[in-house]
Image 1: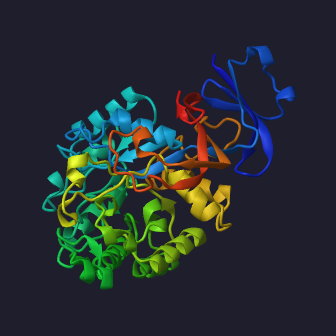
Image 2: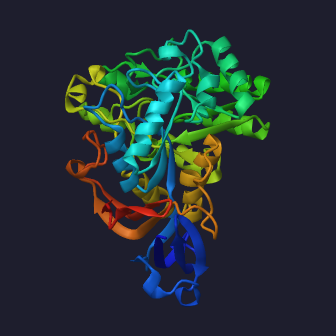
Image 3: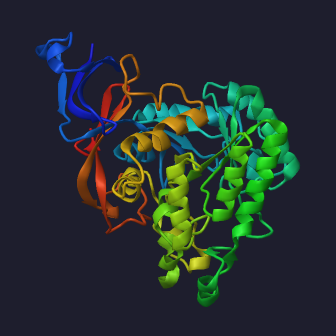
Length: 434
């Protein structure tokens, strides 16, 4: 029997209590003096005085690159970055080499995640075979596989064929799955588009990405979800127009959810003025007024979750002219600190709200049992302890990820993960891998 006692934790930033974890389950919450296990029977005691206890985080949108690009990230190193960031589960996108479009490939990702043992790695199945947008993948077989795939996405590419998207939404209703859409009309923003369309894109000579490229796909998918009864999830929403559509859809009871990335909450298009490819991301960084609307939408519940879109790249994939460099940036290790800084420290959200958007709702959307659960007796001990006052200066060289394309490098953030627990096993202690 393994026994861990967490003392003096602030539960969701509210009341302080001691938490007794026995064999991976929260056995008791209250005062240690009144608990059924004697102090000398406790294997490890964690002093959580001044720390906030949250359910461990769940990321709906992670790129782990394995198989195929293990030079940029592996399931093991990506899992390590996730654990350091306070996560107990991540959803690994399908755009690997080969693409996760069969049950065998999904089970292999799932198995390698179990072998790494730091977080639960849940494979995302592709919507179409090889992400080609021409034929549906083996969606039903992936759903019935050992990996129990419930999230499907061609992320990196849009399912732009309306008929295919409709069929996919109809298909996933059979097992309550969800389609996570990369909303990008390829005729309005093709593969060359790399900067928010506006004065800056014209001045820099960078191909512009208009708001409508995202918004028309969001609107179409909302109507397809209305017709089919299927669930659609809008990945990395970035424009006010998309927010308007999502608000309307939710008001009509349509099964739509949405995510925002930490970088779209904070980073803005003016960072592109020096052509720094670290800031090249898909969809592009937007103006500051867009970021403000995204923050408001996260606070009022229009946006359901924060998801990282953690996208590691090796140096030589970023060291190009801006238009030719790879899209994407790291996010797993810094996401909670960014949200703490921009939403909690400003009073826009409570720690209970953070638990909702970074743990509870992601797990609910993905139908992931055992994660995002309340901190309560009898629940799995998937926990993260956060120091809400601790400041940290991000150093890309210290990352657990293999890659270094970190947009937060050199920035000081407030709110640091001190410990992470996966089913009662400590994966991170004192901010480092245990």
